[in-house]
Length: 257
Image 1: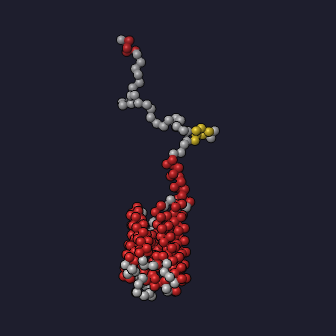
Image 2: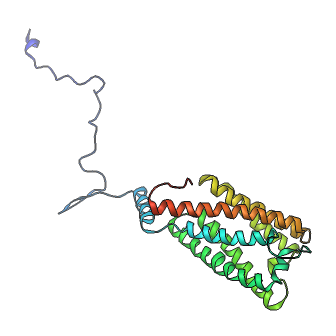
Image 3: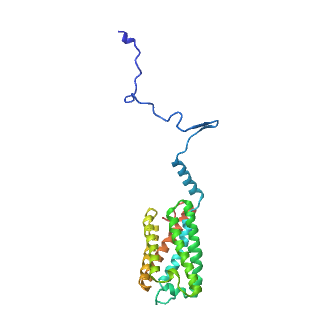
């Protein structure tokens, strides 16, 4: 009966036999001790998250500025293409516009300063913000409007249509390339909002129609249709810019975006 006096082993919880104690190790791997206490290593994911949060907290969103510049310039050009200005219906309205001194003086500063430089600056700050979409969108169309402004300037000084102002094969292909860029930007915009999809989508339609008109030697009705598509794109861009800046300033969603 000696076994009755033997000390029994303490029972372990069911299913715990053979398992090591769980919980964080007393000294995590890579931890360094200093007189002020332990210093734990920071993972690459933590560093990236901190950088993203720092950019969001210290760099303002450049998209509202870029969208405002895009919208104002696109609306102005769309109105001209749609025939709202006093231009001739013979040939391309863009070329007729170049020959109009009043229209030239009124639109050239907007094209170069607002549509070109302001949009391009917003694109560069979008890179800093970490927004690949807005950096690409504003950079591409800021460059387009800057080139258009320079073309009008040279044409106004020389009287000869230059660059994308001339409805020929090279112009048609160049505008088609911007329409192609707009097509994949429209697809990318599905990850942002329906308003941005509409902005990029109607602009793509406008550029495609403009390219088609140049392939046809400057068809007036096709350019008019392109102008109205540009106007719709500009109105959506105005809304997007207003929503972003108002919501950001008031700290709540006033305008759905």
